[in-house]
Figure 1: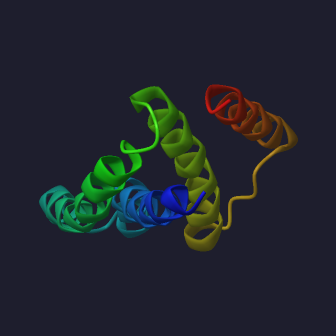
Figure 2: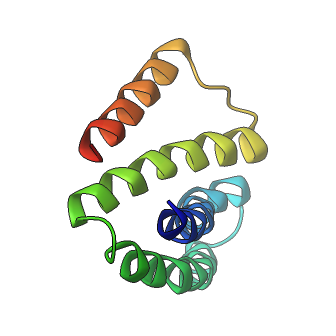
Length: 111
């Protein structure tokens, strides 16, 4: 269980940076596209600094499929947090149901 904690924490950080890089620039649409691209790449650098060790450490105790499903579940959760924090978008009932199904998939993959 302890071997799962570090990769999970690293993936939460990684996905927070990733979602910020992918969607954060939408808050600043008046900026030129090249600035948005450079800013996104700069943020993505920190995403990779966390994602690569998360996968290396996680792969010691998980299969690639298990890692990917966990990563996708975390990605959805961090997306919900980022979209609410930056854009005040609240998830719909269908989106919550979809998230629950993804979490079920993560559970089934890790059995």
